[in-house]
Length: 94
Image (tube, rainbow, N blue to C red):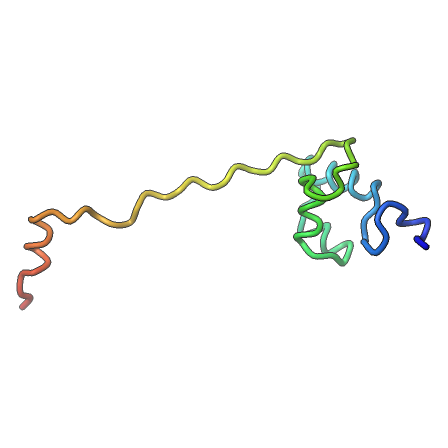
C-alpha cells in the first residue's frame, strides 16, 4: 500500500507536485538540480531525469525542461604531418 504523500510512484522521494515545483524552480534559475537532489536526499541523476522528463512524463504542467545543447567539439589538437614538419622532427638535437 502506498502512503498518501507518494501516491504516484511508491518508493521514490518524488510526487507530481514536487516534480512540478522543481521544474519551475530550475527553469526560473532559483535553484539547481544539485540543490534539489541534496534537499530531497536523492541522486542527482534521479532529479535530472525528472526535470528533463525522462521520468515523470505524466507531469505536463509545467512541461519538462529542455536539455542544454551538447558542448561544441574543440578543434583537433593534432597537426597535419607535412614533409617539412617531419624533417624538423628528425633533425638531431644538440
